Length: 596
Image 1 (cartoon, rainbow, N blue to C red):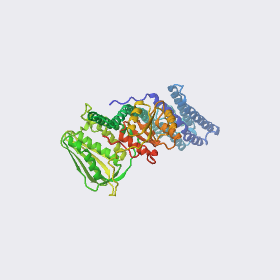
Image 2 (image 1 turned 135 degrees about the horizontal axis):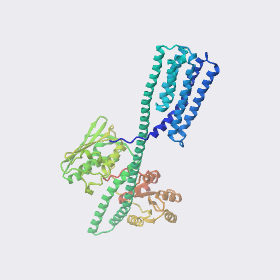
Image 3 (image 1 turned 30 degrees about the vertical axis):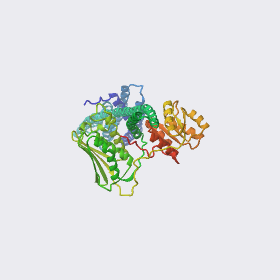
Image 4 (image 1 turned 135 degrees about the vertical axis):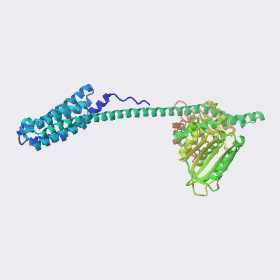
């Protein structure tokens, strides 16, 4: 793979100027102390004013470097190369000034000369770090100091001291040390430049990753908005058809018409179940699905679920086996867990042409492991990760509606995360698949029996206010509720609803969540309750956008999703009319729809 191009040299030079500016503020302390030591040693043989003048010159140069190097990084109007040349000049000035200290050598003893040499070579070694080894700046200081130091020993400080072979060796060592420092500086600068380039590349990579993440999040939000908009636009006419179909079935019909009506309602219920899968995705993404964990007897619970799915298996000539010991108790949300296992067993039946589907429950330490194994087509290893994606189906290129929308396992994946369970999968193409779910075990308790369903709802004679901005929905709702003996008042806006309520108070209000002209059902309920305190209300919506679901959840109103079936509507009205029904949490007792 080709590597990303590294940043231009200019960025390295900018970093170098920043380094020189930082070092320019740190260097004066050790360098100034070294100058004071050298001047103090020379004070015995040199006049005080001369040594003092040299120390003053050293501090003047250090102050100039401190001020000038600190400004160089900010002088963006000045060309970069020009600023680097100024840095080189300041380094050379510093080197020349310290080279002048060797003029004191004739007045120093051999011991003092050795101390002076050590101090100067120490400053040269330190310059490798303070200049990052940048050759022009390093040599500008290293050359004058090292040459003057070596010449001082070789010449006997201008003939004042006797020159022996030791002096020649010391002069040579000083020059050799300078050459070594120059090599170390070259290596140090290479490391510095590479580190700057790596850092710049990392910053660039991080920016690209952030951009990719933003694009991915934007794509996800766009997908969510699309699903919500498509769901809303499709649910509106479906809701109208569902209401008219229910109203139609309450009228006297001849046998043929009644059969047509029943088939029409069955088709609408099938379509509604597939639309509910889109709603489930939106609920989970909006994080408005509550988890109501409880301890319950798992053995009869799973037996009932398998019994409900037995006709689907028998219809394909499959054997659905359950192997579960008695006395199994688990602790989790039974409604959400049912959605997970119903999807897994239903998928196993859908993708198994012959053979069997086996559901097995076994103890695994502090867990009960539920395994759903089939003898179906299996999943190729390359596709196993994708089967949990939305709308992805194995072996269904023609998009057969009998196999669903491809949302089942996507919902399962989200639910498993929500319930903090572990889902495992093993699959062999041509031999079948196995999904295993680990559920927390619980001690046997007198767990309450879970309701399998609700009794058919019946309404008393009520005055119902229907607020919806679409006339077909208002007519359909009026036709259905009138068939149940209710008096219905319809309104297309909050203002119209408020005027009609003041003429005669309704017993309950049914409002669409999203109205026209910036109006919405939540605000409408608040406005009418301001005039009629305690008015029971139910929201009805075809909007599945996560932000809309969160708004409804925060409002504390009962929320139904279009298309609303007759029994769902009647049950919701009874719930809202019951004591405390008006303040009931939106999703309380109503997690995800049970439809596959």
